[in-house]
Image (cartoon, rainbow, N blue to C red; front, side):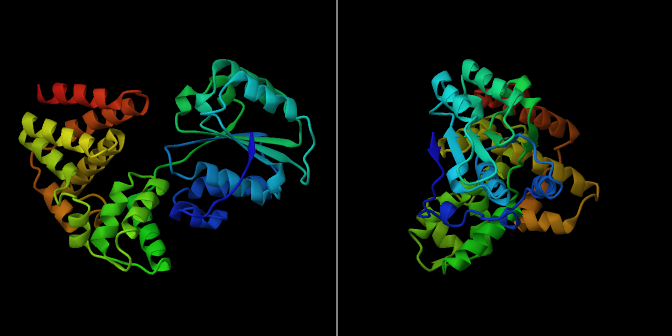
Amino acid sequence: MKKTSENFQTLYRKYRPQKFSEILGQENIISALENNIKKNEVSHAYLFSGSRGTGKTTTARIFASELKISPSDIYEIDAASNRGIAEIREVRDSVSTLPVESEKKIYIIDEAHMLTKEASNAILKTLEEPPSHVLFILATTEKQRILPTILSRCQVFDFKKAEIKELVFLIKNISKKENREIDEKSALLIAKKGAGSFRDTLSYLQTIFSVFHKKIEYENFIKTFSISQNNLEDDFLKALNEESKENAFRIYENFITSGGRIGFFTEELLKKIRVKLLKGNDFGDDFYYKLNYTTEELQNLESLKNINSKHLKDFLELSESLKNSENPNLYFEIFLYKTFG
């Protein structure tokens, strides 16, 4: 068990939000937490669920700060490396001890789904009858692996992945602060590489900053990092439109080889199919489309004459299946065989 510490060496740490107003994309959650504090209705246990890099632990730390909990009374536990019964018994035995400087003390347990069954049961007993001076926040990327009995004793918040427009805003803002010039196409591509994660986006941006010290221009950017100008999502949808099994598998293999995460790839395909169908029926907001997709992407979507509502249904079902799968690549491959025969 360790106390919280900050090391502002990376962009993600340097620009980590320090107050609720700086957190992007989780407005409903922040509003609820602020109301909890304002109305003095703070729960004894919270569960923050969502994919990596969406701000779960950052929000937990800010929440602790807003509750006037001193750093000496904030304890962070990484359940991925402290998952056993011995470590959790240490927590259970220490909760009765009064805070050092604050009215409350807080335990932030990251990757809570990694706790063993015995450790989870030990935490459960503490959550059932917690001392009034103790607050727990469990963070997880896999809520379905948390014991239902633990979930029932927590106030649960589901963090959503960052939207492209939020990541583009973040990239531009930080680039300006770091005295870099970056064009719109580069910012959009970096945002897509971030796959809905603020942390992954800034990690990728830091790599780019190490190469381009002043100006980041799209053509030099993709050439330096050997990025294909072809959009794999659009290429895949074209293969789907043409019912080309060979091209679909080739694009899938290219995506996996490049280190892409198939869950995010599927979600982006689902979004584009939805946009294609909405635009085809004159539904939706053109401003939203233009904010999240390039002109070329929108033109490609309009050219897909054979994409229909069945594709939307199929990808929606696939996306839901991948969220609970320990082997998403295999699920996607099975989906390809079923789709293309």
